[in-house]
Length: 69
Image (cartoon, rainbow, N blue to C red; front, side):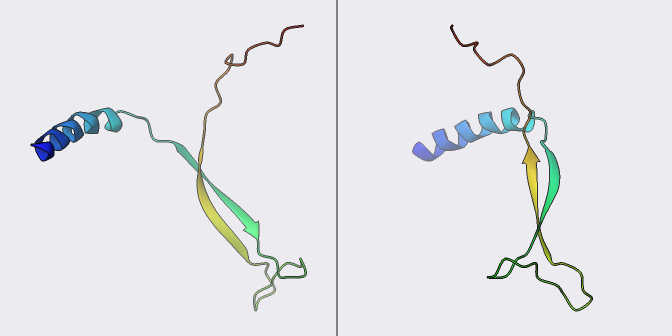
């Protein structure tokens, strides 16, 4: 019985999650540094980098409550 309720609840949630707009992503790269804090270079002399793909969140305007004086 619990399984049937779980599956029914999942079926109701899936269409709601599908309607959400995908987030914009951006690639962020940071230079790799050694123990001394110097950038690490590869065989060609280029600086090594580690890159990650992150989601950009939208900031909402007008949600901040003004401070009382």
